[in-house]
Length: 191
Image 1 (tube, one colour):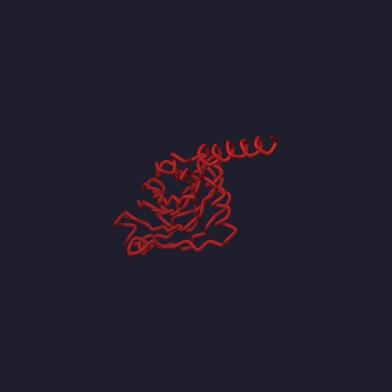
Image 2 (tube, rainbow, N blue to C red; image 1 turned 90 degrees about the vertical axis):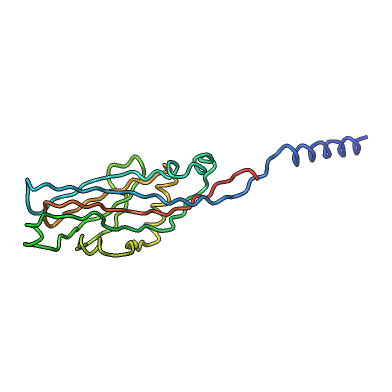
């Protein structure tokens, strides 16, 4: 009798387990996030100018398939970050006096709620004209600890806050710093 009850219990459990539970599998969601920092400096204060801007890169906003599985995200993997200057313009007077407007500063990274960067990528003597004339985007070379921190910022808030800080050697000037962030998210989804 005990044996029959045990076999019956195991049979019911097996049927319930294999038919009632959905199996999960890991799925990769690749996302490219584009961020633009428009910079405009008027002629009111000619000479060097300080830049202090921030933008939000929300991965769920850029990938609706991933947003559908947001509660099942296990990890983020940073594939790469690239940047380039677009739409550079400076006044004809500035061009004659000093044709090489440069940027010295940093691009910082943090979680969505941070007001200051957790980690920074330094940029020194970036010629705005040369960056705009380049065909390809410049690739950020980041060490493993910075990559880990950026991945954690994404995991904490499903977003990355970017900070552009530094100085421009002269104004008036207009330009846009364009950034491309490629990130993969791993989520457990139903088979």
